Length: 134
Length: 292
Image (cartoon, rainbow over all chains, first blue to last red; front, top):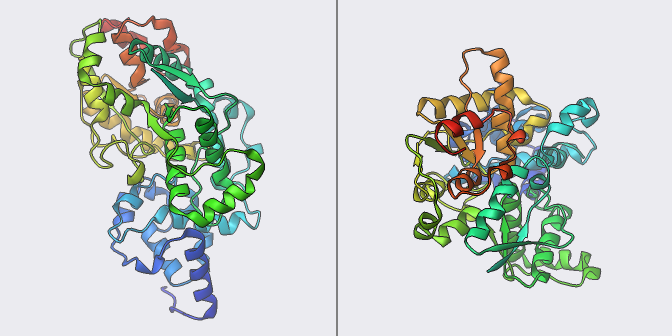
């Protein structure tokens, strides 16, 4: 069931925090869906990138429990296509940062077999560290 | 001519077939790539949060090293290094306040970097500057009916301010390979993401991406895929082995760095290709086409 939209000081504070972290004027998003249309990993997501943007606009903090921000691989396809000039990948990063700054990681490298880590190119491990580990 | 060169971590490990073919290739054009002394990690992934300046330090330190080398151009081969260093230059040029904070943080490090002192150049850009005529002159072998699918991925094309060519319809790899006498084939997934570092903890996503990308290249008649990113290389090459285990009908295709093809065409000894680093063995198709 769709919930009732609530706008209060708390939701506005959350929106402002994500604007500050991303450096993006998220309120410009007019929900055209171009970001979702081009996203290469949308099939794995629980909410689409445009839904993620909408939730942030409305200050709905439960967006932080979505998988979407962790699945974003920062490929910047949405970024180059957004007709409003928004860097959606930076918004995903801002949401990850809210979690990471509370030491809530999305990857535990210790759980990955050592032989797999040895095979992987170093750039994969370092990038995953930067994006998903506090 | 000498150019400063930043290899980055992966060119010294998984990507030895890339560096091993690119550097001798440049020597053919009398370009000596001089590796930076005592270089740092570039940081791999550009810091996307507005207040996290710590993550900017790694690429900026690399650019400081490049400035100290005295050469105004810095060559990169790895697409991720290219992207991170290039974005760091835009960052440092666009925000004076943040630049001052970074300079203050690095006050004991001597050299300050302002953005205009070093130009980061990707190898594809350098080869385009060298030009088709010069490339043609150095080709020693001719190939017939060998269809190459150039795959760009993300980091050379996006965001727009760092793109080495059109973000949507790049042709630079095609131009260089065609100048060397190759036939290239278009496939609609050439600028699509391979899911990048998700390989570390979510290889299923990479499998789904690789399957689409490879199927598209195969359906468009490609004999091999060529690329320039060591992470794309791993995701497209190794993951095909995993896909094949699950789907016997899946048709694999060899993946090579574009420099490997050029090095073979220009008669550079084949050992530099380090074919043992490949998961899908490219040697049968290269032999069939007379390149080995």
